[in-house]
Image (cartoon, rainbow, N blue to C red; front, side, top):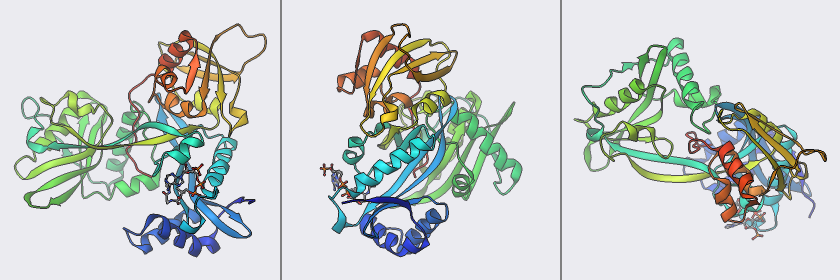
Length: 397
Ligand SMILES: CC(C)(COP(=O)(O)OP(=O)(O)OC[C@H]1O[C@@H](n2cnc3c(N)ncnc32)[C@H](O)[C@@H]1OP(=O)(O)O)[C@@H](O)C(=O)NCCC(=O)NCCS
């Protein structure tokens, strides 16, 4: 079966909606799904593969920057991959993903990121779990800090100054939290309709904020704080957020929020009351590797030089051999020249690239699973180069 890849248009929309309804159900109603797919078509983000003029698989693909090692890395988002039940099991989903990989690499995007509904199909094509998406719960009465804690002020997100302050605070926070998204306008507009916003002013502007909705809790007269988004960039700001939650302790039962594992708030809470209530791994895959390496930041104290080969059946251009060099917080990946000094050498499976580059896995862990091999020095150098806080995403896509 020959499958042709193309961008879908408005004319494909009715069929795409049928396919999406059959694949995902309609918990939020068909109108919402329709609207979402139309938006994707309008942005040129809906792609598909067809045979004999009939689309068999579609998915959404668009570029987005993520913070890795304190720098913005151009990435690819993949979402809403759907094949109608009658067309499944014939390779349409995989064929679509192969085109998506090739397109992302051609466009110079460093990594491909997705929230999988199944790992197997994506792993077979080079994606692997590369970070967490976690939900936490904190009883408001447990959110204590010494004294009354720093005070927050109410923010008005209709005011440009407050909106700009929140976005600037998020950018400073995200630069230190791999792999948070460098949000575009559309992502912010979805968050900024939160019912409440509070923040804390530090010496250099807003150093913490929380965007909050109230929710009812079945069987409890108290309400829940749903913290849609938060960031803190100073110890005082962090304490202010915890004190802010604690200040709700008479009438709100708990707060639910996102955050990395381990959670930054645990360091200012007196006891282990911040509980991980659910977590899920998103997946990443390498695309244009020289771009990914040049764009991301590296620990300033690390110097490394490693010869790398990558077993990537889908992307011949990614195989190398490469010379990975890291120094002074920057990295480069260049074709290995014949006359290069003999370097410590490592070989990576295609699925090792995502988790290594985000810092989710050490090279030694990947080697244990048979996804990396090489001399101990090379593996240790890779681990040191890509080390950082556990990668996390806060925005589902
Ligand atoms: C997941 C989906 C896109 C796969 O499409 P498809 O065209 O059937 O996939 P392929 O024929 O290319 O299968 C590729 C591999 O995926 C895996 N796979 C496919 N469907 C699977 C399922 N239901 N459960 C587990 N693994 C599955 C298999 O490993 C398969 O490889 P194999 O045939 O060598 O065993 C399709 O089943 C679908 O639309 N499901 C509902 C929506 C969904 O889950 N989308 C994914 C969102 S992230």
